[in-house]
Image: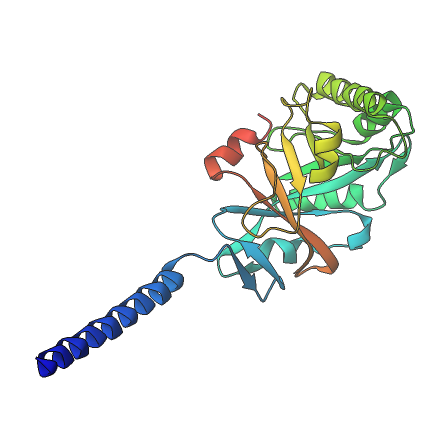
Length: 254
């Protein structure tokens, strides 16, 4: 009787051992086969989120003089630059030092391009819209205009919303297309939760590798401000587009 008990006890431990081994193997195999939320790309020197087909950058005078031919030709593990947002204007009178050159050179390389305006909350939104409109000529194949708004400078919420809406309305009236709003998550949730649902959103958020921490649907996600790319001497912002090539083509001005 004791021998039988000993034998069954030994069998139990064998089964337990092999079961643990099987569970461990399944765990590591699942981990190995599950796509990582982001992958480090040595060429760009940043991690880039998985699952996105179209990648792009945004630039201003802070990227200095850009060699757009090198930007166009760079590729790292299948990822290339598929679009660029270029800073055009700021406030009521400022034009970015590199805008004209960047606009022409990006087009020469057939990189889909868009222009953005940096909004100064304390300045006239109508004059700011005029500044942008006077500088930016959009045509078929370009992306819609963008309003970069991320500082309130003490302006109350209601007044801020009114001023931003004035800029958006003036620009939409001129180009015949709804502008994109660029901002960070905290700013969007504080100022634009209501009344701006119809505008495409370009959201900046660097703290989450899979997707930005926001419930509202977005079109572009700026996921890093520390990218590196051939042809640009300074760090550059990296973005992804939410959708495939067909979606992106539909997003462009026609």
